[in-house]
Length: 89
Image (tube, rainbow, N blue to C red; front, side, top):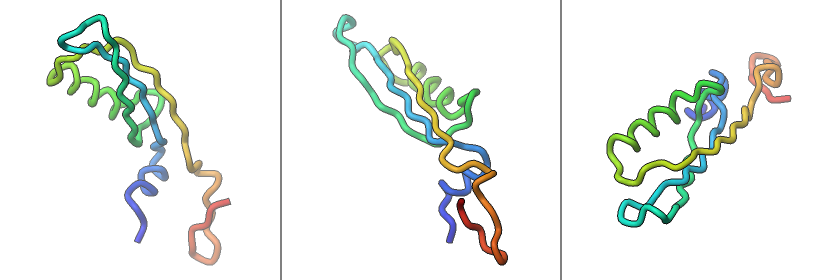
């Protein structure tokens, strides 16, 4: 069985990691770090935007900054069919 993550990569999703700096609700001068990782589509990042919208709506710690790293792990040119079987090159 093919994993859902593999299917997403075939659809153009790549692994996205966001480092989110946010202010502590009770101590606004203190910054905390939260690491978020999910498959998303660059450069629009709709999954990350949905998460940040949730954060702003539901959590008390205001976001200070977000740093994003993105890597497409599988590219369509790397996938070939050999005798009816998908192979990676």
